[in-house]
Length: 128
Image 1: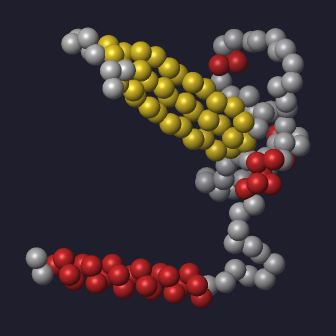
Image 2: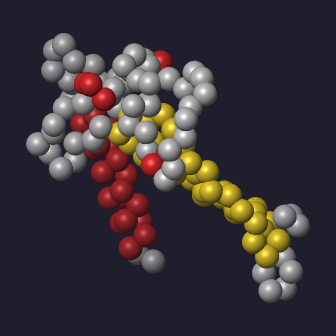
């Protein structure tokens, strides 16, 4: 039990040190620590637009379309247990391009990315 107060004190001290350091460290002149997400979200220049009928080309159209800024894929279904309980599921994968195809640069870093992915998964118990 004596470890708990010590652990709490160490965590509290670390939090104070991190807070003071974050307050004292300033970005270099001419830079901003704020991310301008609204500008990124609303800038569609250079990307293809889905503004009319499209001639589909499968299986290629099952995959990503790099000319578009945003796209997503849904996988949905229903499951039933051996006892007869029903469940629904949904898996969604989102792809978001960081820059239009003509502005994408070769990156020397293995961590460099021209697009980001996000996903979510949900299961629903139909009875509840």
